[in-house]
Amino acid sequence: MHKDSALTIKNKFLSGENSASEITSCFLLRAKIIDNQTGALLSILSDRAMKKAENLDRKRKNGKSLGKLAGIPIVVKDNILIKDEITTCGSKFLENYRAPFNATVINLIDEEDGIIIAKSNLDEFAMGSSTENSAYKIARNPWNLDYSPGGSSGGSAISVSAMIAPIALGSDTGGSIRLPAAFCGVHGFKPTYGRVSRFGLVAFGSSLDQIGPFARSAEEIALMQEVIAKPCKYDSNSVQYPVEPYMDELSQSIQGKTIGVPYSILKDLEPEILKNFENSLKVYESLGVKIKEIHLNLIKYSVPVYYILAAAEASTNLARFDGIRYTERSKNAHTLEEVYELSRSEFFGKEVKQRILLGTYVLSAGYQDAYYRKAQKVRTLMIEEYEEAFKLCDIIALPTTTTNVFKIGAIQDPLQMYKQDIYTISANLVGIPAINIPTKLDKNSMPLGIQIQGPQLDDARVLRFAWHYEKSENTNKFYPNLFDKEMR
Ligand code: GLN
Image 1: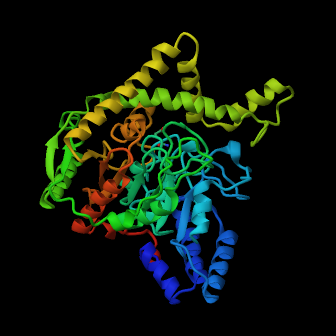
Image 2: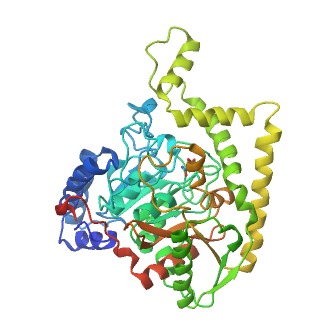
Image 3: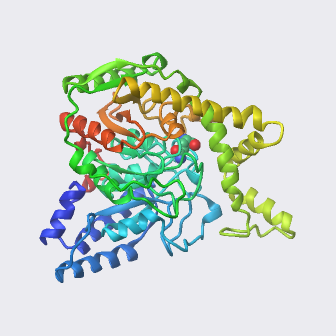
């Protein structure tokens, strides 16, 4: 059952071949075993999931109508609130924090009868590109346990890749869905900013954050988007248009369309990444798509711009973790001042502190104009540059990553780690939809991917390009040779 697509699992449930309880117990068992090896999960929600499954079995027996996600196991990144469940954000600060309400996406999944089985591991507060910054455990790539699964949504990428669930949710502030999707050989989609409600997602960089799905196929991504991409009155940036019929639009022709490629910024790629990128363009050409050179010269500033803006927003957002509300409190504190100081110094990890320091600095009097405002201006120029680019092409192709999958511990220099995101960050700064499409395996038998970016609000177009690639190359059949034979 674990190799089945979400839609097959759903159909088996609807036809009565498998009960929701059977499906759920099967995936819960996998979750335990695979988590032991990969560190993919931070909690397994056995009680919640079994209760939901029994409820679904009852509904089916009584002939009640069932939702779009009926019987489908789903994993959710542990920075998304589920009422009464622990939400750690990968941080010791929230080790015992139980969410008092559901994120909007959780309500939407519940309404459509999806079964949330676990919460996945991440870099602390989603800051990182390798899931090595989790305060709990390092996550490992199911294709080879010595390698990183990417980050920050590493646990969600592993969950789909190692078949803990056919669909998982992550969050993407600067690439945290697309990069781990590329490293684990699955699709990972960052929707248009505001398309999916951020209500109940623990804020990192509020003007950049976006929830999105991982899945093996573009069709399953489209299915999930139909459920979660809805207007939400609790998110002031929520796009107010009704959800689109993404699934119906997948197979529309892309023949005669144009892919724009900013060749001039692709010079420093590792040879295998460049080759993979070029080969993927050939696949599109064979599907009748034209390739055209475009210019996105400002992407070279995307890493500095992002690390100023994301850090500035993070320093503000994380001010709420003060040892008084939500969180753990230092036992060594005797005064109010010490409660703040010691709690923050004891329970935030190194990377998070680094970002808070950087963000506070770029927002401080005297430096705000030089850094924060300047970065905002460059962001506006990038938006304009993308608008011009989309006048010349229908879609933009970029590599997802700059390097092949790296080994755990291989990148120690934070700047090197930040540079991993050079090709993903622009989509967040500009607010456009973007997806990682798995393509091939490299010489170490680790996955490679490419990235497709579309114009704002045309999420359907991005999914369509992914669908055609996958149909042509059968890339929804990427199964890692799992460590445990019985789990394969
Ligand atoms: N790697 C980037 C960072 O560390 C992006 C993280 C994200 O998208 N959440 O900030």
